[in-house]
Image (cartoon, rainbow, N blue to C red):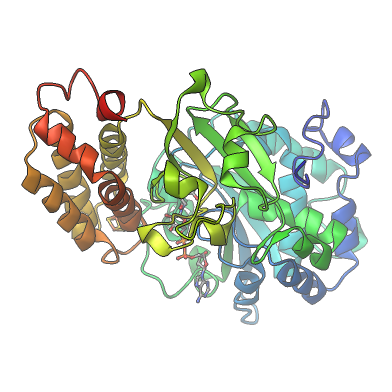
Length: 441
Ligand code: L3W
Ligand code: SF4
């Protein structure tokens, strides 16, 4: 049974509302934190080992400690709720059912960072959630947990919710800041990092929803206790949104000590694959991370079980491993076509590219065209090599990680499933009616 920290009260009816949330211990971590010094809270977060839950896994405490503190310049906390990564829907769950957990985490984080005005930037497609968040903000304010002189400490905090307009790129932190400032969401060059020059050129911490929510249990149980949950540098719990060919899609909280096999097949989590089909592959961290075939997903190259944590999933590097990413766990059964799947993703990244850098703007469209050609049974063997070459030229040569995110799925698909690409080239007459999965797996 996995330990629950974030979702432990998610089943309680009415937990979305302040009164119920408070009755079950809500805002006690905030009360505790407001009696501590900001630097003491920072130490707890550092000790916890919490790593950013948005995809990159950057240590949260370290990011907070990078925040510049020039005299007389306001600083900000911005919560990245632009959850647009295909396969990722865990932040939506948190905001929809536990909005006060996020607001309590923001209060603690804002107090620690010295932000008196903090923001939640939420993806436009989550059209019903801003109302939930704003209602929770009003409740927290009415109860004295937001606004002026919170709990008599002299600390003031306002939280604003800003809706995005449906662009995936606005989940990239600097594009998000551009959008929040009212401009087109084009990523900025880094450095300077937002911690030095962020919103309106002020020092800004941008954190994922789940990272900020995790600060609440960290203060509740202490950083040291939090760090004992999990394993190695994968401390605490992680929300995984599971989808694809599984019996029980949904959001699960895991403690990062379970194996991938257990996560897929156990009734506590995904409940196995429908109709007894075989596992073909999985994308464990949202669409941007490399796809992994079943044999490498259940075991590492050394024959060790593969675990649901940052280290084990990336074990062996990108050649064999993948990434924990944002925890968007997509399962493909034996009937799925990797070529078709890769083409769908390529179309997505091409559509979402902001167009600032040539390798991404041109490369994503080019990859999509070639993948479509192969999928339609019109490809040649040289197209597979060309595809490989294009993704190599995109990776590492762009302003923001969208370029890499477009390149990695293609690279991993060719690396692990080249035979399937070749089957499409060799069987043009079958490619539209049958896929490699059905025919050969
Ligand atoms: C100050 C330094 N700050 C790094 C900060 C930086 C950022 C964080 C991580 O991309 C990934 C991407 C997606 N001084 C710093 C510093 N920072 N060095 O640390 O930075 P970085 O560049 O490693 O990552 P990123 O730009 O935040 C995020 C991947 O996540 N991803 C997720 C996609 C989508 C979602 C979603 O829908 N929720 O997360 C999935 O894998 O591909 O590689 O804050 O400022 N010296
Ligand atoms: Fe825009 Fe793509 Fe360049 Fe990112 S990599 S800045 S999305 S063109």
